[in-house]
Amino acid sequence: MANLALNVQARPTALGDVDVRVKFALLLSVSFLIFVWNSLALQAATLGVMVVLLLAAGVRAVEIARLVAMLWPAFALIVMIQGLWSPLGETPVWHLPEGLPWLGGAVFFRWEGLAFGLTVCCRLLIPLLAFLYLFATSSPNTIVLGLVRMRVPYRVAFLVSTTFRFVPLLLEELSSMRDAQRLRGIDVDAMGIGRKLVLIGRMLVPLIVASLRRAQQIEVALQSRGFSGSEKRTYLDAGRGRLRAAEWLAIVFLLALPPAAALLRAVTGLGTAVI
Image (cartoon, rainbow, N blue to C red; front, top):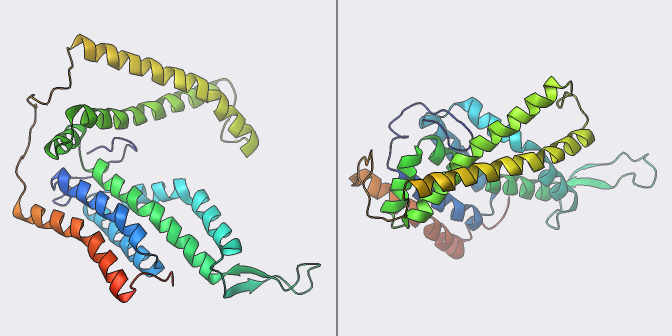
């Protein structure tokens, strides 16, 4: 199945074919769980589980690596800032050389700050992987059906689906603009970061205009088809409406996990300390 936002291909697997309501329960669970735990070990374990889940669901490792590669500059910046200036820092990682004027011997990085920075990176990456699992293994129609069966108003479900359909269209538009620049002899990839940011800024105006034009075309198409957003409708591929017993158990377990972790932390202190 194709991912709505990142154009990720996931091969069919049993884990990828579970009901979309289970996937929404996973997304909700990990989104709360990452804030219950401060522990780097628990956050890293959760991240590992999400990676294994994605691989078992048919998402290729290269697609996961591509997502991480897109975000690594932000992750590196977070770790550097926390390692340098986090108030949690006590244990030095290394010192500046003693012979360095003014700053010789000063502590440059602290382990607690680095650990907290890595924890923040896990908190950002875990829900993104959960989103990737949801959208890489579910079709737009399946997502809308899942939201409707969760008693979400059809208009809201349709809006969510349409929003994610828009993302690849905008990426294609941006890619076409970059190709047009190359045909004019402007190599965007070979530019320095300053010139590249200026050029991308100039592309934003035609990109916004193109997105508004597409939105207007969708509005006209919906009005011409008499779209009302009524929930009393039939579906071309309604799929399976009832959850299996295993899927019910998975939803109950996922929704019970964050409050159970919070209670365990309050009673035993598990997950309170970063390291």
